[in-house]
Length: 226
Image 1 (cartoon, helix red, strand yellow):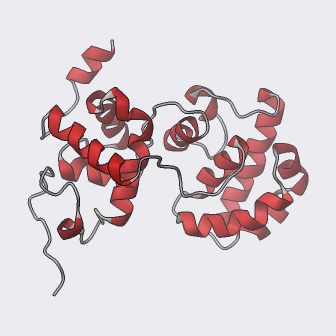
Image 2 (cartoon, rainbow, N blue to C red):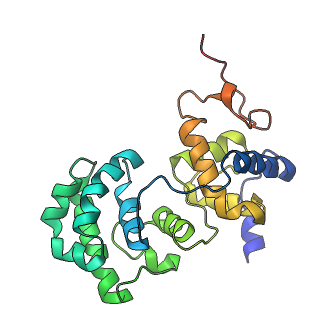
């Protein structure tokens, strides 16, 4: 089944050896990558990632530094209530709807999962405000599962380099899982995301300061600023 699915995906524009070399270089630069979101428990990670939609990690961290001391657990979050959650997170975008989702997902974790964050994607995506990307981040970061959480950075780098092209995030996710060697799967999500966030920028990538530029298939590489 999986092999038949993989055959329908867009073909990478670089060979497996080059893809493995990309991961080696990114791993050498950052051997133990972790999320830049601040959290202490899987529950707090779920909340932080849910809050990060259309917001920066820096902005989310500022909000959760106020929120998590007041509500560190699902029960405490439900007890705090939607109005108070809104006040704690109102500095980030879409805070009203996010506050509603945070309280609702906390209640579902209590009612349906015994107060523990589920460790299966199908269960995670049932939580309000949690989609496939959020679920993959939680599975990878909190539970050590080799998932690919495709955000805008990973989508851009995968297509721009040619390592895992695709027209939507799910296709890119599957393509990355197909071409990423097993030894790099656990950290791959973080390496590609951070590369996109700090080097392979959307408008003007820093090709002149990129450790994988010689392998990248991007045609319009940039020169150093004058």
